[in-house]
Image 1 (cartoon, rainbow, N blue to C red):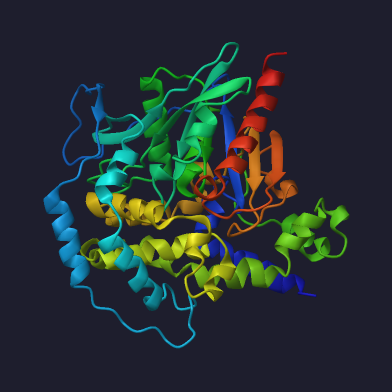
Image 2 (image 1 turned 135 degrees about the horizontal axis):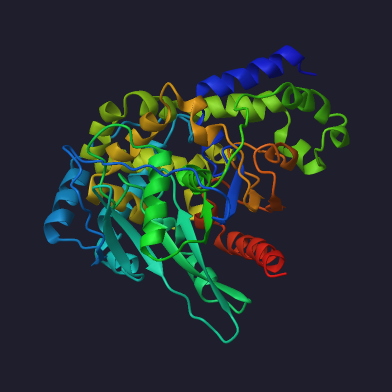
Amino acid sequence: MQTFENIKQALFNLDHYNLKVLAASSVGIGGLLCYLALRRKRKTIPFGDGWWRVGEKPPSEDTTIHSFVVETSEEMIRDLYQRIDQTRYTDSLEDCRFHYGFNSDYLRKVVSYWRNEFDWEKQVKVLNKYPHFKTNIEGLDVHFIHVKPIQRAGQRVLPLLMVHGWPGSFFEFYRILPMLTNTEEDVVFEVICPSIPGYGYSEAPHVKGFNTMDAARVFHKLMERLNFSEYYLQGGDWGVVTYTIHTLASITAPFPHRASLVTVLSLLIGRYLPFLVGFTREDVHRIYPYMQKNVYELLRESGYLHIQATKPDTAGCGLNDSPVGLAAYILEKFSTWTDFKNRDLKDGGLERKFSLDDLLTNVMIYWTTGSIIPSMRFYKENMGTNFQKRVDNITKIYVPVGLAAFPHELMHCPKTWAYSRFPDIRSYTYMARGGHFAAFEEPELLAKDVMQFVKKVEKKRLK
Protein backbone atom coordinates (compact mmCIF):
# COMPACT_ATOMS: atom_id res chain seq x y z
CA MET A 1 0.00 0.00 0.00
CA GLN A 2 1.31 3.43 -0.86
CA THR A 3 1.97 5.61 2.12
CA PHE A 4 0.02 8.72 2.95
CA GLU A 5 3.11 10.84 2.35
CA ASN A 6 3.77 9.27 -1.08
CA ILE A 7 0.28 10.04 -2.34
CA LYS A 8 0.23 13.47 -0.75
CA GLN A 9 3.59 14.31 -2.35
CA ALA A 10 2.46 12.95 -5.72
CA LEU A 11 -0.62 15.17 -5.69
CA PHE A 12 1.46 18.14 -4.62
CA ASN A 13 3.93 17.49 -7.43
CA LEU A 14 1.16 17.22 -10.01
CA ASP A 15 -0.31 20.48 -8.78
CA HIS A 16 3.03 22.27 -9.11
CA TYR A 17 3.77 20.51 -12.36
CA ASN A 18 0.86 22.43 -13.90
CA LEU A 19 -0.10 19.37 -15.90
CA LYS A 20 -2.44 20.31 -18.69
CA VAL A 21 -5.03 17.73 -17.68
CA LEU A 22 -5.61 19.51 -14.40
CA ALA A 23 -7.04 22.40 -16.37
CA ALA A 24 -7.81 20.95 -19.70
CA SER A 25 -10.08 17.96 -20.11
CA SER A 26 -12.91 20.44 -20.15
CA VAL A 27 -13.65 20.03 -16.47
CA GLY A 28 -10.27 21.08 -15.17
CA ILE A 29 -9.90 17.72 -13.47
CA GLY A 30 -8.72 15.23 -16.01
CA GLY A 31 -10.45 12.35 -17.69
CA LEU A 32 -13.80 13.96 -18.34
CA LEU A 33 -15.62 15.76 -21.05
CA CYS A 34 -17.96 18.42 -19.86
CA TYR A 35 -21.29 19.70 -21.10
CA LEU A 36 -22.65 22.90 -19.60
CA ALA A 37 -26.07 24.44 -19.78
CA LEU A 38 -25.40 28.17 -19.66
CA ARG A 39 -28.15 30.11 -17.92
CA ARG A 40 -27.61 33.82 -17.37
CA LYS A 41 -30.16 34.14 -14.60
CA ARG A 42 -27.71 34.84 -11.79
CA LYS A 43 -25.98 38.10 -11.14
CA THR A 44 -23.09 38.25 -13.60
CA ILE A 45 -19.43 38.96 -13.08
CA PRO A 46 -18.31 41.82 -15.37
CA PHE A 47 -16.82 40.47 -18.57
CA GLY A 48 -14.25 43.19 -19.02
CA ASP A 49 -12.69 43.74 -22.39
CA GLY A 50 -9.50 43.18 -24.32
CA TRP A 51 -7.53 44.40 -27.31
CA TRP A 52 -5.08 41.99 -28.94
CA ARG A 53 -3.40 44.19 -31.53
CA VAL A 54 -0.47 46.57 -31.15
CA GLY A 55 -1.67 50.09 -30.45
CA GLU A 56 -4.75 51.57 -28.88
CA LYS A 57 -8.22 50.17 -29.34
CA PRO A 58 -10.37 52.25 -31.71
CA PRO A 59 -13.53 53.87 -30.33
CA SER A 60 -15.83 51.56 -32.33
CA GLU A 61 -15.68 47.94 -33.42
CA ASP A 62 -16.73 46.40 -36.73
CA THR A 63 -19.26 43.71 -35.78
CA THR A 64 -19.87 42.47 -39.31
CA ILE A 65 -19.89 38.71 -39.85
CA HIS A 66 -18.25 37.72 -43.14
CA SER A 67 -18.44 34.45 -45.06
CA PHE A 68 -15.13 32.64 -45.32
CA VAL A 69 -13.94 29.90 -47.67
CA VAL A 70 -10.92 27.67 -47.09
CA GLU A 71 -8.64 27.94 -50.12
CA THR A 72 -5.47 26.41 -51.45
CA SER A 73 -3.11 27.05 -54.35
CA GLU A 74 -0.65 25.22 -56.57
CA GLU A 75 2.15 27.32 -55.11
CA MET A 76 1.25 26.18 -51.59
CA ILE A 77 1.25 22.52 -52.62
CA ARG A 78 4.54 22.85 -54.56
CA ASP A 79 6.21 24.39 -51.52
CA LEU A 80 4.88 21.59 -49.32
CA TYR A 81 6.15 18.89 -51.67
CA GLN A 82 9.56 20.53 -51.96
CA ARG A 83 9.96 20.62 -48.20
CA ILE A 84 8.77 17.02 -47.84
CA ASP A 85 11.24 15.87 -50.51
CA GLN A 86 14.13 17.52 -48.64
CA THR A 87 13.34 15.88 -45.30
CA ARG A 88 16.25 14.32 -43.41
CA TYR A 89 15.24 11.20 -41.47
CA THR A 90 16.96 9.44 -38.60
CA ASP A 91 16.71 5.67 -38.38
CA SER A 92 14.64 4.30 -35.53
CA LEU A 93 16.25 2.25 -32.79
CA GLU A 94 15.60 -1.47 -32.91
CA ASP A 95 12.20 -2.36 -31.47
CA CYS A 96 11.60 1.16 -30.08
CA ARG A 97 8.04 1.29 -31.43
CA PHE A 98 6.54 4.61 -30.12
CA HIS A 99 8.43 4.68 -26.80
CA TYR A 100 10.86 7.32 -28.08
CA GLY A 101 8.14 9.35 -29.78
CA PHE A 102 6.99 9.02 -33.36
CA ASN A 103 8.61 5.98 -34.93
CA SER A 104 10.75 7.07 -37.90
CA ASP A 105 10.05 3.94 -39.95
CA TYR A 106 6.31 4.48 -39.74
CA LEU A 107 6.80 8.22 -40.28
CA ARG A 108 8.28 7.46 -43.71
CA LYS A 109 5.11 5.54 -44.60
CA VAL A 110 2.87 8.39 -43.43
CA VAL A 111 4.92 10.94 -45.36
CA SER A 112 4.90 8.76 -48.48
CA TYR A 113 1.11 8.70 -48.31
CA TRP A 114 1.05 12.46 -47.71
CA ARG A 115 3.31 13.13 -50.68
CA ASN A 116 1.86 10.68 -53.20
CA GLU A 117 -1.77 9.92 -52.28
CA PHE A 118 -3.20 12.55 -49.95
CA ASP A 119 -5.33 15.02 -51.91
CA TRP A 120 -5.37 18.41 -50.15
CA GLU A 121 -7.63 19.98 -52.76
CA LYS A 122 -10.19 17.24 -52.09
CA GLN A 123 -9.91 17.77 -48.34
CA VAL A 124 -10.39 21.52 -48.78
CA LYS A 125 -13.75 20.70 -50.35
CA VAL A 126 -14.51 18.54 -47.30
CA LEU A 127 -13.64 21.45 -45.00
CA ASN A 128 -15.95 23.73 -47.00
CA LYS A 129 -18.82 21.27 -46.57
CA TYR A 130 -20.05 23.45 -43.69
CA PRO A 131 -20.45 27.25 -43.74
CA HIS A 132 -17.39 29.14 -42.48
CA PHE A 133 -17.39 32.69 -41.16
CA LYS A 134 -15.13 35.31 -39.63
CA THR A 135 -15.89 38.28 -37.44
CA ASN A 136 -13.59 40.72 -35.67
CA ILE A 137 -13.68 40.59 -31.86
CA GLU A 138 -11.25 42.54 -29.70
CA GLY A 139 -9.08 43.20 -32.74
CA LEU A 140 -8.88 39.57 -33.89
CA ASP A 141 -10.55 37.94 -36.88
CA VAL A 142 -12.25 34.98 -35.21
CA HIS A 143 -13.07 32.01 -37.42
CA PHE A 144 -16.00 29.67 -36.82
CA ILE A 145 -18.27 27.24 -38.57
CA HIS A 146 -22.02 27.65 -38.04
CA VAL A 147 -24.12 24.60 -38.84
CA LYS A 148 -27.88 25.01 -38.79
CA PRO A 149 -29.97 21.90 -38.26
CA ILE A 150 -32.51 20.06 -40.33
CA GLN A 151 -35.55 20.74 -38.16
CA ARG A 152 -38.44 18.28 -38.16
CA ALA A 153 -41.98 18.89 -36.95
CA GLY A 154 -42.10 19.21 -33.17
CA GLN A 155 -38.34 19.46 -32.70
CA ARG A 156 -36.82 22.18 -30.54
CA VAL A 157 -33.65 23.80 -31.83
CA LEU A 158 -31.00 24.49 -29.17
CA PRO A 159 -27.71 26.36 -29.72
CA LEU A 160 -24.52 24.46 -28.89
CA LEU A 161 -21.01 25.90 -28.73
CA MET A 162 -18.27 23.27 -29.20
CA VAL A 163 -14.62 24.14 -28.58
CA HIS A 164 -11.56 22.16 -29.68
CA GLY A 165 -8.18 21.80 -27.99
CA TRP A 166 -4.52 21.23 -28.88
CA PRO A 167 -3.27 19.77 -31.19
CA GLY A 168 -6.74 19.58 -32.68
CA SER A 169 -8.97 21.98 -34.54
CA PHE A 170 -12.58 22.64 -35.46
CA PHE A 171 -12.21 19.71 -37.89
CA GLU A 172 -12.44 17.30 -34.92
CA PHE A 173 -16.20 17.88 -34.91
CA TYR A 174 -16.93 17.04 -38.55
CA ARG A 175 -17.89 13.44 -37.78
CA ILE A 176 -20.20 14.34 -34.90
CA LEU A 177 -21.95 17.30 -36.55
CA PRO A 178 -24.46 15.26 -38.59
CA MET A 179 -25.43 13.36 -35.43
CA LEU A 180 -26.28 16.61 -33.66
CA THR A 181 -27.86 18.60 -36.50
CA ASN A 182 -29.88 15.86 -38.21
CA THR A 183 -31.65 13.65 -35.71
CA GLU A 184 -35.05 12.13 -34.94
CA GLU A 185 -34.82 13.17 -31.29
CA ASP A 186 -37.06 15.75 -29.61
CA VAL A 187 -34.28 18.32 -29.79
CA VAL A 188 -31.77 19.18 -32.47
CA PHE A 189 -28.75 21.45 -32.28
CA GLU A 190 -27.58 24.56 -34.07
CA VAL A 191 -23.83 24.16 -33.67
CA ILE A 192 -21.10 26.80 -33.59
CA CYS A 193 -17.48 25.58 -33.65
CA PRO A 194 -14.94 28.41 -33.39
CA SER A 195 -11.18 28.22 -33.78
CA ILE A 196 -9.35 29.45 -30.69
CA PRO A 197 -7.44 32.65 -31.60
CA GLY A 198 -4.00 31.55 -32.72
CA TYR A 199 -5.31 28.23 -34.02
CA GLY A 200 -6.14 27.46 -37.64
CA TYR A 201 -8.07 30.21 -39.37
CA SER A 202 -8.52 32.45 -36.31
CA GLU A 203 -6.06 35.31 -36.13
CA ALA A 204 -3.35 35.03 -33.49
CA PRO A 205 -3.02 37.65 -30.73
CA HIS A 206 -0.33 40.25 -31.46
CA VAL A 207 0.42 41.05 -27.81
CA LYS A 208 1.11 38.94 -24.73
CA GLY A 209 -1.43 37.63 -22.24
CA PHE A 210 -4.25 35.94 -24.20
CA ASN A 211 -5.46 33.01 -22.06
CA THR A 212 -8.58 30.89 -21.55
CA MET A 213 -10.34 33.70 -19.71
CA ASP A 214 -9.89 35.92 -22.74
CA ALA A 215 -10.89 33.16 -25.15
CA ALA A 216 -14.04 32.59 -23.10
CA ARG A 217 -14.91 36.28 -23.28
CA VAL A 218 -14.30 36.35 -27.04
CA PHE A 219 -16.47 33.27 -27.62
CA HIS A 220 -19.27 34.64 -25.46
CA LYS A 221 -19.18 37.85 -27.47
CA LEU A 222 -19.35 35.70 -30.60
CA MET A 223 -22.47 33.92 -29.33
CA GLU A 224 -24.09 37.22 -28.42
CA ARG A 225 -23.24 38.55 -31.87
CA LEU A 226 -25.08 35.52 -33.26
CA ASN A 227 -28.06 36.48 -31.02
CA PHE A 228 -27.69 33.66 -28.51
CA SER A 229 -28.02 34.76 -24.89
CA GLU A 230 -28.47 31.18 -23.61
CA TYR A 231 -26.69 28.17 -25.03
CA TYR A 232 -25.19 24.80 -24.28
CA LEU A 233 -21.43 24.28 -24.18
CA GLN A 234 -19.23 21.28 -24.85
CA GLY A 235 -15.48 21.02 -24.85
CA GLY A 236 -12.38 18.95 -24.27
CA ASP A 237 -8.73 19.80 -23.69
CA TRP A 238 -8.51 23.61 -24.12
CA GLY A 239 -12.28 23.38 -24.47
CA VAL A 240 -11.83 24.26 -20.80
CA VAL A 241 -12.93 27.69 -22.00
CA THR A 242 -16.48 26.33 -22.04
CA TYR A 243 -16.80 26.40 -18.28
CA THR A 244 -14.70 29.53 -18.07
CA ILE A 245 -17.48 31.18 -20.05
CA HIS A 246 -19.85 30.19 -17.29
CA THR A 247 -17.44 31.47 -14.65
CA LEU A 248 -17.63 34.83 -16.33
CA ALA A 249 -21.39 34.78 -16.63
CA SER A 250 -22.52 33.63 -13.19
CA ILE A 251 -21.91 34.05 -9.48
CA THR A 252 -19.23 31.64 -8.31
CA ALA A 253 -17.85 30.56 -4.95
CA PRO A 254 -14.27 29.85 -3.91
CA PHE A 255 -12.93 26.39 -4.70
CA PRO A 256 -9.57 25.14 -3.39
CA HIS A 257 -7.28 24.32 -6.30
CA ARG A 258 -4.83 22.16 -4.39
CA ALA A 259 -5.59 18.57 -3.46
CA SER A 260 -7.35 18.50 -0.09
CA LEU A 261 -6.80 16.18 2.85
CA VAL A 262 -10.13 14.54 1.98
CA THR A 263 -8.82 13.75 -1.51
CA VAL A 264 -5.64 12.21 -0.13
CA LEU A 265 -7.57 10.12 2.39
CA SER A 266 -9.98 8.94 -0.29
CA LEU A 267 -7.02 7.72 -2.33
CA LEU A 268 -5.59 5.83 0.65
CA ILE A 269 -8.90 4.20 1.54
CA GLY A 270 -10.58 3.98 -1.84
CA ARG A 271 -8.68 1.01 -3.21
CA TYR A 272 -9.77 -1.19 -0.32
CA LEU A 273 -13.03 0.33 0.92
CA PRO A 274 -14.27 2.33 -2.07
CA PHE A 275 -17.85 2.66 -0.82
CA LEU A 276 -16.63 4.66 2.19
CA VAL A 277 -15.29 7.44 -0.02
CA GLY A 278 -17.87 7.37 -2.81
CA PHE A 279 -15.77 5.43 -5.34
CA THR A 280 -17.34 2.88 -7.64
CA ARG A 281 -15.62 -0.29 -8.82
CA GLU A 282 -14.99 1.40 -12.14
CA ASP A 283 -13.31 4.32 -10.34
CA VAL A 284 -11.01 1.88 -8.56
CA HIS A 285 -10.16 0.18 -11.84
CA ARG A 286 -9.31 3.46 -13.53
CA ILE A 287 -7.41 5.13 -10.68
CA TYR A 288 -5.19 2.37 -9.29
CA PRO A 289 -2.32 1.70 -9.09
CA TYR A 290 -2.31 5.43 -8.47
CA MET A 291 1.37 6.27 -8.92
CA GLN A 292 1.59 4.32 -12.16
CA LYS A 293 -1.57 5.72 -13.76
CA ASN A 294 -1.60 9.27 -12.43
CA VAL A 295 2.04 10.21 -11.91
CA TYR A 296 4.48 8.12 -13.93
CA GLU A 297 2.31 7.95 -17.06
CA LEU A 298 1.76 11.69 -17.01
CA LEU A 299 5.46 12.37 -16.53
CA ARG A 300 6.10 10.31 -19.66
CA GLU A 301 3.58 12.35 -21.62
CA SER A 302 4.17 15.91 -20.46
CA GLY A 303 7.52 16.93 -21.93
CA TYR A 304 5.74 18.92 -24.64
CA LEU A 305 3.90 20.86 -21.96
CA HIS A 306 7.06 22.17 -20.33
CA ILE A 307 8.39 23.30 -23.68
CA GLN A 308 5.19 25.03 -24.67
CA ALA A 309 4.61 26.56 -21.25
CA THR A 310 8.12 28.06 -21.15
CA LYS A 311 9.80 28.49 -24.58
CA PRO A 312 7.18 27.77 -27.26
CA ASP A 313 8.80 29.92 -29.96
CA THR A 314 12.08 27.99 -29.90
CA ALA A 315 10.68 24.54 -30.68
CA GLY A 316 7.97 26.12 -32.79
CA CYS A 317 10.51 27.50 -35.26
CA GLY A 318 11.48 24.01 -36.37
CA LEU A 319 7.89 22.80 -36.55
CA ASN A 320 6.81 25.83 -38.57
CA ASP A 321 9.63 25.21 -41.07
CA SER A 322 9.34 21.44 -41.52
CA PRO A 323 6.01 19.85 -42.48
CA VAL A 324 7.32 16.39 -41.59
CA GLY A 325 8.51 17.59 -38.19
CA LEU A 326 5.13 19.19 -37.62
CA ALA A 327 3.30 15.99 -38.57
CA ALA A 328 5.43 13.89 -36.24
CA TYR A 329 4.91 16.30 -33.35
CA ILE A 330 1.15 16.51 -33.78
CA LEU A 331 0.34 12.93 -34.78
CA GLU A 332 2.31 11.43 -31.90
CA LYS A 333 -0.36 12.94 -29.60
CA PHE A 334 -3.15 11.35 -31.62
CA SER A 335 -1.42 8.04 -30.98
CA THR A 336 -0.62 8.11 -27.28
CA TRP A 337 -3.52 10.24 -26.07
CA THR A 338 -5.93 7.83 -27.70
CA ASP A 339 -4.47 4.97 -25.65
CA PHE A 340 -1.17 4.77 -23.74
CA LYS A 341 -0.80 1.17 -24.95
CA ASN A 342 -0.30 2.50 -28.47
CA ARG A 343 3.30 3.22 -27.47
CA ASP A 344 3.87 -0.54 -27.78
CA LEU A 345 2.90 -0.60 -31.47
CA LYS A 346 5.19 0.07 -34.44
CA ASP A 347 2.56 2.25 -36.08
CA GLY A 348 1.39 3.85 -32.84
CA GLY A 349 -2.14 2.55 -33.48
CA LEU A 350 -2.89 5.73 -35.41
CA GLU A 351 -5.09 4.07 -38.00
CA ARG A 352 -7.15 2.15 -35.45
CA LYS A 353 -9.35 5.17 -34.76
CA PHE A 354 -8.47 7.62 -37.52
CA SER A 355 -7.84 7.69 -41.25
CA LEU A 356 -4.63 9.21 -42.58
CA ASP A 357 -6.76 11.60 -44.60
CA ASP A 358 -8.40 12.96 -41.45
CA LEU A 359 -5.15 13.12 -39.50
CA LEU A 360 -3.27 14.88 -42.28
CA THR A 361 -6.14 17.30 -42.83
CA ASN A 362 -5.73 18.44 -39.24
CA VAL A 363 -1.97 18.76 -39.75
CA MET A 364 -2.56 20.76 -42.93
CA ILE A 365 -4.77 23.23 -41.07
CA TYR A 366 -1.78 23.99 -38.83
CA TRP A 367 0.73 23.95 -41.72
CA THR A 368 -1.11 26.13 -44.21
CA THR A 369 -1.98 28.75 -41.57
CA GLY A 370 1.42 28.75 -39.85
CA SER A 371 -0.43 28.46 -36.55
CA ILE A 372 1.69 25.96 -34.64
CA ILE A 373 3.69 28.62 -32.74
CA PRO A 374 0.71 30.72 -31.59
CA SER A 375 -1.12 27.53 -30.64
CA MET A 376 1.84 26.53 -28.48
CA ARG A 377 2.02 30.01 -26.93
CA PHE A 378 -1.45 29.43 -25.48
CA TYR A 379 0.22 27.17 -22.91
CA LYS A 380 2.65 29.84 -21.76
CA GLU A 381 -0.13 32.42 -21.51
CA ASN A 382 -2.23 30.07 -19.39
CA MET A 383 0.47 28.75 -17.07
CA GLY A 384 2.00 31.90 -15.69
CA THR A 385 2.79 32.71 -12.08
CA ASN A 386 -0.84 33.40 -11.14
CA PHE A 387 -2.28 30.30 -12.84
CA GLN A 388 -3.40 28.60 -9.62
CA LYS A 389 -5.03 31.74 -8.24
CA ARG A 390 -6.89 32.80 -11.36
CA VAL A 391 -10.64 33.08 -10.95
CA ASP A 392 -11.42 30.29 -13.42
CA ASN A 393 -9.28 27.88 -11.40
CA ILE A 394 -10.64 28.67 -7.92
CA THR A 395 -14.37 28.81 -8.51
CA LYS A 396 -17.32 26.46 -8.48
CA ILE A 397 -19.59 26.03 -11.49
CA TYR A 398 -23.29 26.18 -10.61
CA VAL A 399 -25.03 25.58 -13.94
CA PRO A 400 -26.19 22.04 -14.82
CA VAL A 401 -23.20 19.94 -15.87
CA GLY A 402 -22.80 16.67 -17.71
CA LEU A 403 -19.55 14.73 -17.48
CA ALA A 404 -18.31 11.91 -19.70
CA ALA A 405 -15.43 9.80 -18.40
CA PHE A 406 -13.58 8.11 -21.25
CA PRO A 407 -11.49 5.11 -20.18
CA HIS A 408 -8.29 6.12 -22.00
CA GLU A 409 -8.24 9.78 -21.00
CA LEU A 410 -5.03 11.09 -19.47
CA MET A 411 -6.49 11.04 -15.95
CA HIS A 412 -9.69 9.84 -14.31
CA CYS A 413 -11.85 11.97 -12.03
CA PRO A 414 -14.47 10.14 -9.92
CA LYS A 415 -17.88 11.72 -9.67
CA THR A 416 -17.45 12.29 -5.95
CA TRP A 417 -14.43 14.52 -6.67
CA ALA A 418 -16.20 16.33 -9.48
CA TYR A 419 -18.96 17.44 -7.10
CA SER A 420 -16.48 19.67 -5.29
CA ARG A 421 -16.22 21.77 -8.45
CA PHE A 422 -19.61 21.11 -10.06
CA PRO A 423 -22.44 20.98 -7.49
CA ASP A 424 -25.16 20.44 -10.12
CA ILE A 425 -24.06 17.31 -11.97
CA ARG A 426 -27.02 16.06 -13.99
CA SER A 427 -25.16 13.34 -15.83
CA TYR A 428 -21.97 11.34 -15.26
CA THR A 429 -21.24 8.61 -17.79
CA TYR A 430 -18.53 5.97 -17.76
CA MET A 431 -17.92 5.73 -21.49
CA ALA A 432 -17.28 2.25 -22.86
CA ARG A 433 -14.32 3.25 -25.01
CA GLY A 434 -12.40 6.26 -26.21
CA GLY A 435 -9.62 8.57 -25.12
CA HIS A 436 -8.66 12.22 -25.26
CA PHE A 437 -10.07 13.15 -28.68
CA ALA A 438 -13.64 12.10 -27.94
CA ALA A 439 -15.53 13.74 -30.81
CA PHE A 440 -12.89 12.60 -33.29
CA GLU A 441 -12.61 9.04 -31.93
CA GLU A 442 -16.12 8.17 -30.80
CA PRO A 443 -18.57 10.68 -32.30
CA GLU A 444 -21.61 8.42 -31.91
CA LEU A 445 -20.99 7.74 -28.22
CA LEU A 446 -20.39 11.41 -27.51
CA ALA A 447 -23.42 12.58 -29.48
CA LYS A 448 -25.71 10.19 -27.57
CA ASP A 449 -24.31 11.35 -24.26
CA VAL A 450 -24.69 15.03 -25.12
CA MET A 451 -28.27 14.36 -26.18
CA GLN A 452 -29.27 12.51 -23.01
CA PHE A 453 -27.75 15.25 -20.85
CA VAL A 454 -29.57 18.02 -22.69
CA LYS A 455 -32.86 16.12 -22.45
CA LYS A 456 -32.47 15.86 -18.69
CA VAL A 457 -31.79 19.56 -18.36
CA GLU A 458 -34.63 20.57 -20.70
CA LYS A 459 -37.13 18.25 -19.03
CA LYS A 460 -36.54 19.79 -15.63
CA ARG A 461 -36.41 23.27 -17.06
CA LEU A 462 -39.80 22.94 -18.75
CA LYS A 463 -41.60 21.65 -15.65
